[in-house]
Amino acid sequence: MASAVTKKLEQLNQKILSLKQEKQKVQEELAREFVNTLQNTPALSLDFPTFIGGVLDAISKIQSGASEKEEWQKAEGRFLRSLAKIQTVKDQNSPAKTA
Image (cartoon, rainbow, N blue to C red):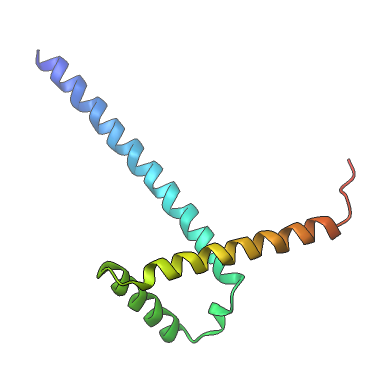
């Protein structure tokens, strides 16, 4: 019986390790996406303390249930749509790659 419990515990520990690794990968992808998004906005032209202060203020407002959250989500959607349009135009204007 003890060996079955030990085996189950080992399996659970392996699952935990696997999930932690998966979480790390997702967080890294989110960070890359965040930086790529910032590079397509004037956000990086702000001085660092102002930028971080604004982000922290937004997080605080979101956590307190501020009504701005919905407007920010809509703005993000508009931004992503405009990026997609820009990318489509770039793709159409770039020469076709040859094999």
